[in-house]
Length: 491
Image 1: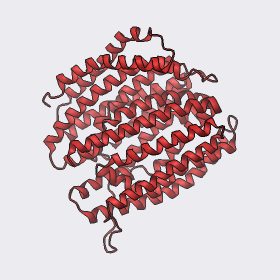
Image 2: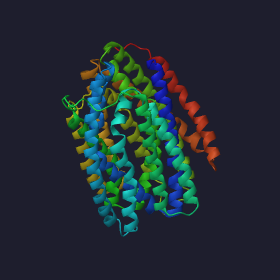
Image 3: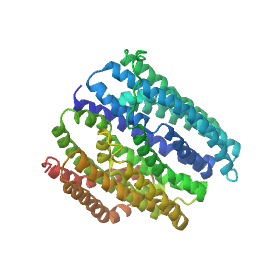
Image 4: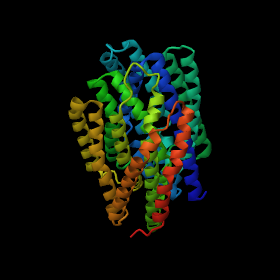
């Protein structure tokens, strides 16, 4: 299969996954809030983040395995591939056992922490039920995910996951509407999500019939940079998961629910941006070892395409967010979900954060975990210290200000490192592209704000019509910009 076909399959499958995930994300939370209350929705969102912290026990294993597998798959060395997978599986089993112990401790602590706002018994069982999916992932799919990712077959992962999420949406919607308890709903959800691992396992066994344990006389394979990769995932998880944890600790579950609603919207936007990057890490990882000059040229074009797409997406978001929030939260009356300042801060954070995606993909493809570990630690330090200080002064807004500061540092540093130490190219043009895109976003939102927000929006159909017009108009300047810069030389 050609590289272009692989890219299209991975992007298409991932885009389907993001759409299905976004649909579920937008349908279920309002229903949960209206049926069970904002405190329950905040509890669910916080549990997800606490569990995400526990998954740090996996951090670094998959990333290190993917980098190691590039060599084995490129050289078609089946024995080396099996040794790598065997080592990976051993790591995952140990991590899975530790995760199960940590999950039990988390269930006890979180139930105690939130007992004044929600039933401790309910919280305890919810943590265990939600964490069961991760336990199965550790024991039955971790090493297979690394293999499929390294072999440029992430479309398999995305397709199966999209199907399971779609089924989960239908079942959960029915159970909530039928009046079942939130615990029953979550049990059904976990069972559905766990079932996908059987499909993954069956596909891998069929597609790779020569997967087997290495011979006993082979020396066990040692994954390199596992700890370095773990540092990156640790800092990333600390940054992206700490807000809800800190809000739960310092504010309330209702505040956590407010943050979760906005994070849901901007998370869907982030997934849309990541969808056009699906599979690019494996492609760049292979091409870096075979054709460096071609890789450099392809990366520059990909970066220009991505940044123009980012500009278009966030221009539309800035213009359409206010009317959407008004519609989306119309029945959420037990907390104030209308927070214009939060919307602006989320928009700024999203633009700066996601501008790093191309550079981050190249750093991961090159396996530069150890070399960029200090910068990752600095970013996490800035984020955590500022978050703890700012949340005391400005609440949720303080969390976002801290994220903005850390992202400005790390995103610009990633771009510099990628240009200077991986691709060996001048850094001035990528920085100028950033500046150009940011100016274009600000100009388009400023010009379009009055016309868009003077349109009366009473239903979702009205909003969709307005969105289509806005998207078409906003696409014009960014399409023209892309045509001007896409094929320009690197130097």
